Length: 411
Image 1 (cartoon, rainbow, N blue to C red):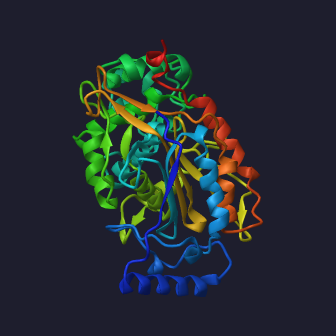
Image 2 (cartoon, one colour; image 1 turned 180 degrees about the vertical axis):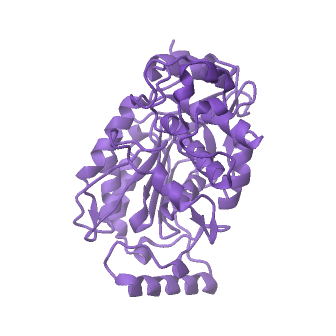
Image 3 (cartoon, rainbow, N blue to C red; image 1 turned 90 degrees about the horizontal axis):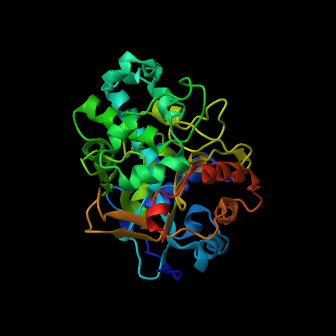
């Protein structure tokens, strides 16, 4: 059932210590260059470690009335938005929830989980568990050594250019809803194109990350994530598995909108978390750099918004995107992270094993326009910003992502 009514959450600054920290941060930002789009100096960075600080938008140079236009858009009844969190310089400047939901409400990622899975690969490479992006996947799937799949590299996979047979629209519904061992089904696919030659959005390709992490680290991707990603950044998350226990690395991380924002902050700040390098800065740059001939995609991230200028300086945007607009938007140059989640229901016995009657259900927005949603947030920082550059990546993503439960839900 739709819950279109929003609820705003505003928490005052904590007592004197937090206020002093804020004043110190504000002073550092001023010294660094008032009016530009640079992030605060390292000494002034705030972290939700362990808890978020919530401040008024004006404290971070944002116009509250303009910012509120994003709330109006997101919570129009047909948008089916459950939660929105806006983070600037490490503090929550606004968050809004549907009636009946709040900061503790669990949302799901759908395909935004691919960006989490790709990050596990980066961490495994940083640790030496995986040799690098050019390694053949036959190292993890030995049967491939005997055929032309031996030419598929890890980079090919993460770029969605493995060449393995897959049609997201036709194959994904059966794969997600009616396949017990989704990893084995992913591994069994033959080539349909030469590795590296053709971009093809494929959830089955991202599912192969699950087996790669298992074989490289000796742990499930979910357990590895808890150790090296969720735990270090303070996330509490459940990651769905298939019926035989393989983590669904193409989707299905369940956590709060606030905790999704933690992941965004990690990427906004080059992989660092309060003095600890959780994933290397080199990986962050590699994972969000557009593929030369596929300008809207990188390594399990949607990217390449060019020509977006805020306060006189060009800024980037990269996005973890999921079905029905479960989105994490990251603007690193202005230390801005925005999360939007749709209304979510976990169906079945309440477990996160995708088997039998256990399903994920989110309510699709009747329409969603990144430009309409993000424009007032950016305009609250720079009233003159031209946001038309935001349109292209969202259009490409909407064509690629499909509803894996559409068939099971139909009469």
